[in-house]
Every structure is written in structure tokens, then in C-alpha cells.
Length: 267
Image (tube, rainbow, N blue to C red; front, side):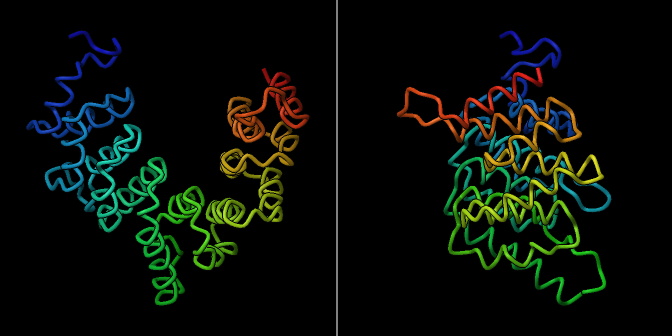
């Protein structure tokens, strides 16, 4: 069988076999590759799911690189059958495995994961109370809150609200994003518009991602004017445009036309 892409020089069969092979580097790479090229094979999904408990590939500081790539790949492969294992992965001691699991559960639309996501979010608040002098990044807060927003966990607004004043700006932005999704209150969308005007490029990029994810139309002009790469602004505007296009309508709204004109100006 020919490779899906010439650059990796690997076939689907080889990638799947590598997931249980002796070479840890090839395991790690193949998990990434299967997700990258969206190879939705039942055997690949089975082995990637099993990889969430891998003990062989471990860094000196206790991280699990293979588990991380496996968790990311399962979301990209729309592997609904992996949801229970991804929920279990939220308890992994590796911060980045928990982050990848939350992101994939969001991609999979797994509302059954909401209690576990909330539990991890609340765990961070408990740790902060116990160690107030330590910078508060015990959990992947942004990934957890983004998942809760996408999953429409309206009954858990109270768990998200404390992060609106978090000392880390990107965590604040994730809270703004989730609160807008959960409440529809424009005040939270407007906070993201203000974030687009910040001095730090990395934070402006983060705000672009968040405001595009919620499809906040009042932010369209601010997105186009943000001092950031046009490619990122176009992605954010695409998110806004998608919210303006109604599946049952044959006509474009004024908002959609305005966003399309902004996108044209950036090309």
C-alpha cells in the first residue's frame, strides 16, 4: 500500500503496527501520524485507546508523550468508542495528557464527560486554596473550560465564573469564552474584543482563537484590525461567518456579508 503522504514514508499498516512495536519513537510518531491524516481504522482506534494506559514511554519528569499523542489522535478520528478511556485519562498525573483528553472530549461532543471535566476544574480551585502562593496552573483550565462551553454545560456556570479573574490572561480568555457560550451574555464577548487590543502578540493570538470559536459577530471588525497574522484573523472570521450562515436559509444576512467582505480585504 502506498503512503497517504510522501513525506512521512509510512503506510497505514505500518503506523498501526508501530503502535505496539518496540520502538518508542515510532509509537509516538505513528500516533501523531494517524491523527494527522485521520486514518479511522477500527484497529488503529483500539490500539490508540489502549495507548492511553501506556507505561513504556515516560519522560524523566514523569510525562507520558505517547499517551498525549494517542489522546489527541482519538479526537481527530471521531473515536466515540474511546470516550470512557478519555474520561479516565482526565485523571492521569501528566498535565498534558489531561489537556489532550479534555480537548478530544470537546471534539467528540461528549456530554457524558461533563462531570469529570467539572471535577478537574474544581480540583484546581482546591489546590489554589491550599497553596495560594504558588502560580495557579494545576490543571489545564483553558482546555477544561473550552470543553464545558462547547458541551453547553449550563448548570456548571458557577464552576467557570471564578476563573474570570484568574492571574493568567489566557485562562481568563477561556473563561470569557465559556461564559459567553453558557450564558449568551455579550459582556463576555466584549471582554475578548478588549483582549484583541492587548500588547502581547501571543495573547492576541489566543484571544483571536477564542472569539472565533464563539462566532461573536460584534468582534468582526476588531478581528480584522488586530495586530496579528492575517491567517489567524481569517480563521477567526471564518468561525464568526459560520455562526451567521443558517442551514435553512438561502440568503446571506448583512452580518455574513460584512464578515465575508472583511475576509476578502485580508486576502
